[in-house]
Image 1 (cartoon, rainbow, N blue to C red):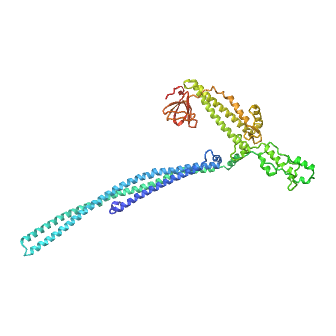
Image 2 (tube, helix red, strand yellow):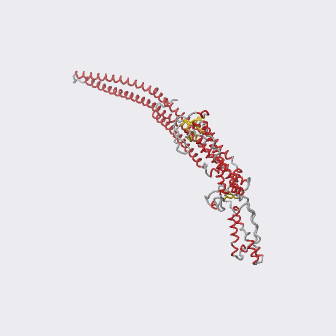
Image 3 (cartoon, helix red, strand yellow):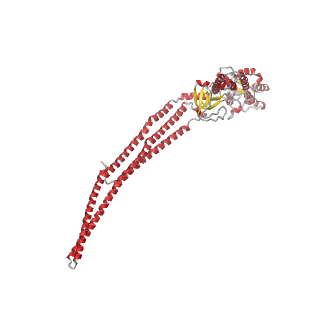
Length: 606
């Protein structure tokens, strides 16, 4: 089966068919390109969707992701991000393995097709030229034959005519012979042209055209095979990411199976538990007793004297006010007799009508509330330092969190103190590297910060221990502390910004503790004056020029060699020293660090 033998006369149709095949291949390339664009767009939308629902840092949403259901949702977002990455892989692989190769292959096909059909057209033009030559010689032979025949007939007519002279007859005979010779020459030329045309035509249809059409057939078959391989690659690219996509989906299922409703319920309890006891039963207040008694001046005065301090609100008001009453304050006993003003539709007494309410309100105002002050009830009000405005359980959590933060700050300051001590030690051993006395001020400052932070931590630990019931009431502790520092002054009872009330109703004085911090902090000012600075732990080479314009930084020049006195602790800064008076921090990415214990005694060079 060969196009050269079967389709020898279908040159134009083959030209159209091969062009159609290339168009089909280009259409497939365009299809794959659009598929890659869709995959990229889909991956981008998935990533944007995942990013949109990611919890924002330092926001309330981060706290919500403590719950297992929210953790599962976060895992789903992360898996969807990986899922989007696989679609990007599909796009990249299809681009590199299909569209790029096919685009190059199409260009090669176009060049090959153009060359083959150019050879075919050249052969066609040669055949057309041979055909024209054959037709020309044929027409000339035909014309010469007709001219010779007319000349012969004219000679015979002149020869038969007796009136014609012999010279005219001879002339006609010579003309006929000339025409006959021309016909013979045209015949020979026509015969030669015909033989040549037949030979060229045979070579054209049995050699040139089959060879050209065979090349075109092979080209078309390569195109068909290539598009089939590309379709297989198209499927394989998708199949290669199926296992990873399956793992992403398995991760989502695993995260969903990890949801624990009991754990979430416990977290709700920890988040919102107040620590208060539910209110007790409301006592029955018998308003019918005054009706049964004999109204007299004596009984009226008794009811005034006994009922006023003991009368209390109804159940509704009491239910609202109970969170603000001290826990250690026992509830008032039930009234022995109600005042006549409490009886519905009873006789009105102007003097007795407002006494019970005013008494109860005064009692509420005199008692120390659990909230810091009434301004803290307003939206955006100031939060007390000891979180006394919170319920006990929530207050305990906040205090624990504060203690942990202070301990981290203390540890950070201690690390800085150790670094300065090592540097001072290096200066003492190598005075040419720096003056040890220059670090005393910084060391003293760091030591004071440590003591302040420790006192602050102790203060919060005391509040935490009080909440957890491990220490005596804060009122006694505050009185002991205020006795130690009588000269510091005591806060007033009605100062909302200084008074504090713990959930159990105890009382403390912040001003005394603040003064205590100031007094105790000075006791440790000179403890670490003699500590040595940080030693050099290696050298570093500046990769880039850095302009240290902020406080605590140091400027370096590209190629400069300096001492390293403190490594990067995860914050992106490395502490270095040039000489005894110049030290500071530079970005870690700006220097190349060489940790060498033997570099302590080396001299700095630039």
